[in-house]
Length: 113
Image (cartoon, rainbow, N blue to C red; front, side):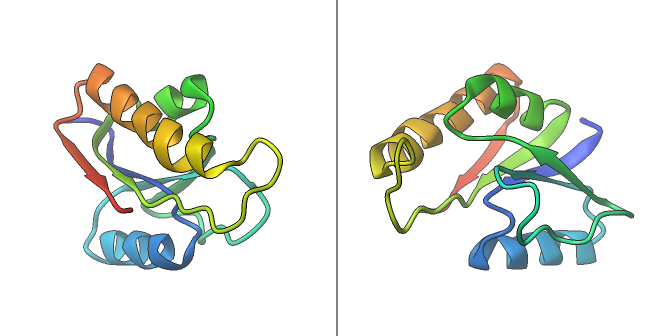
């Protein structure tokens, strides 16, 4: 078992905040992987840890999933801006999260599209 129960990508979004809250309320240790470190961050402390990760950057994704038992990808992009395109986030980013989870030996990946 890992040190972190579940790593949640997109944990500051509408759906992700609810996922994080429910997991934490159930006593699960949660790592919230965020790209914007100043907006919408859930309260830290107790069993919630916030780390920087961008699904477009495999190194940060690998760090975020390290020592986790499960991963949830709830990242959503509503408007393309610069390099943050639908392809980069919803396809390539989702593949990066899945790859990192597989390489870390994590047996449970939930992808919400």
